[in-house]
Image (cartoon, rainbow, N blue to C red):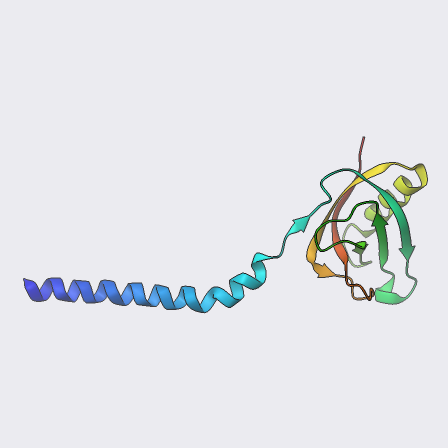
Length: 130
């Protein structure tokens, strides 16, 4: 009976050790993705500048707002290959022309490569605020 309990304890220890090794090995990968987040200024903002690039990135569109978000201090960008490109650009330009405020969300780990500051974040959502 004692031998049977010892074997069971050894199996339990092996399974705990394997789980610990897997968890420890995953730490570098988990911490890389832990900082990826959708961020927002937290309040409706006004668009201060917008730029449409004719050739860079195939026609990227970037804009700045009165308040940035963590990691997105310079502004926001959208690529022509993004599914909502036309809707996002239309919303931004309409709000800017009318002086309306918008709600903005972006991905703070996906920065626009065309900016020397690196603080234009990939746009996830933009909407006119009422």
